[in-house]
Amino acid sequence: MYRTAIEGLREWKARAGRKPLIIRGARQVGKTWLMKEFGAVAYAHTVYVSFDNNQRMRELFSADLDVTRLITGLELYAGHRIDPENTLIIFDEVQDVPQALTSLKYFNEDAPQYQIICAGSLLGVALHPGTSFPVGKVEFLDLSPLSFAEFMRAMGKESFIELLDKGDFAMATTFKQEFIDLLKHYYYVGGMPEVVLNFAANRDFTEARAIQQRILAAYEQDFSKHAPTEVVPRIRMLWNSIPAQLAKENKKFIYGLIKDGARAKEYEYALMWLIDCGLVHRVHRVTAPNLPLKAYEDLKAFKLFLVDVGLLSCMTRLRQDVLLDGNELFKEFKGALTEQYVLQQLKTVREIVPYYWTNDRNTAEIDFLLDLGNAAIPLEVKAEVNLQSKSLKAFADRFHPPVSVRSSMPDYKREDWLINLPLYAVDQLYRHCAQPETSP
Image 1 (tube, rainbow, N blue to C red):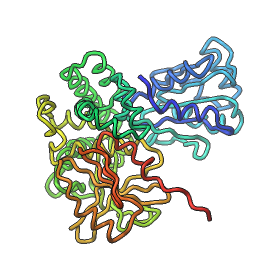
Image 2: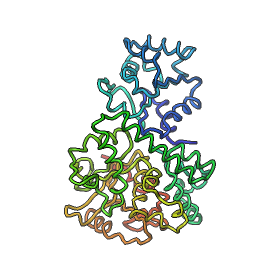
Image 3: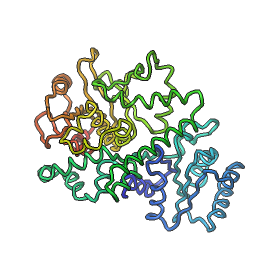
Image 4: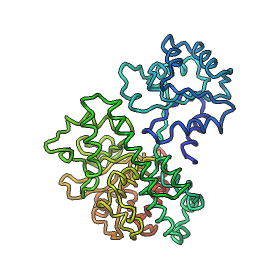
């Protein structure tokens, strides 16, 4: 499967002054495959080292971290010399040997000619005790599940992606039903690589669901394996409450839905643990639509989304027959799947940082308020065909954003103050809303 993240790796390879790269992302989003694929297509040689249960590598990195000695050890392990210009060095499951993570500092300072990419579960990388993290000595690339565009490509629909990339919405509208059918499949299948690969080959929804259930079971096992024992029950309860949180009309996260009387302080560590693992995305409320939006974060109010829409549909036991029932799928659980889908696509666009906004009385809400760097753009998500946008119009009249966006089922339309962007094209939002830079 093609992953757009490989273009980010090519940019890293070509960049002068590049540093060792750490790929971040939840388990099973395809980090290992991406690193190996990049090594195969962009280098003459690849040295792949998995630190999982690798005693020899554990011993190599347990002594001093002299780079010359480490390269000699890696050459002996690989069975050939390492040419820094033509060899990619891959450290996988790097959290299992924290000294390997620390060594990146010395590679950056003393031997920057070596090209090193690392990956590891954030369960270990973010929380491992005693690890000297090489702050400022590494770069990061975030890997998510497959986006809807990547899913369409996996389904053999490259020409559909080209239509959206060209902004040819007249032609896209002609094939609207095919886009909608693909979107339904994506809501159910999601973007986890193993699920998509199987579905692309077999078109079997039942098998897709079985794989998702195995992935969810593996995540539950990770809770017990990697988190402090006393926190595991809280992680499980918080994790399992997310579908109910998103099914509410107001999707603000409420601790009382985890259990009666639950308090933020009790679940603070559990929440951070899930965020650090990449299993959930937290979207904060902002108190005012002023740039930078981060300066106006309300740290006590947020929405919580899962890593993948397919996993959400699995957790909610979405029925397979709803795929055939008109557009009912997009309204399931009060549009929870649709808002999850939109957030998941926004997270794949590097130029966008998502928040949401409500007024002080909570009588008006904008589903997402997007920091595009030089503009704050309101985005309303509509799962239904009913396109009344009272909150969005009131927001636009009050704050005068450069443009407002509604993402919904109807076709693309641009008015004076509003763009209606079809749900299947929501990842095109930045190119339609980006404001030209102004000279100082």
